[in-house]
Length: 120
Image 1 (cartoon, rainbow, N blue to C red):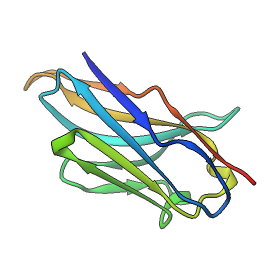
Image 2 (cartoon, helix red, strand yellow):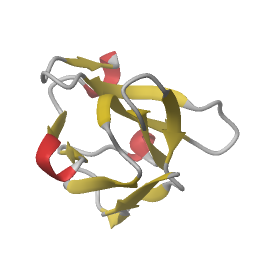
Image 3 (cartoon, helix red, strand yellow):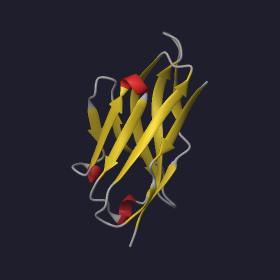
Image 4 (cartoon, rainbow, N blue to C red):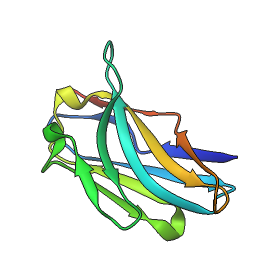
């Protein structure tokens, strides 16, 4: 089994920064794409950003230039650096990963979520 453990959420003022981390553990052969999603109250979960194993990235338009995704393959960890935070970034942020537990078996996993609140 595979677990994704997130950390780094919290309360920050508008214009501030936070860094989220997500570490994968368990029976891992290889991790392909990793990403971050978020869900605000009363809204559907939405994609924020993804990163391939090779480091190619993709961002949702509203976070381009403010958020940066990165990963450390040796630690099975993905990070989300969030700068210039806005109140509309307030949401529960979820880590997601495509994990091969054997050379031929791949499953998609979610973290438990971490709350990010941007407010004065």
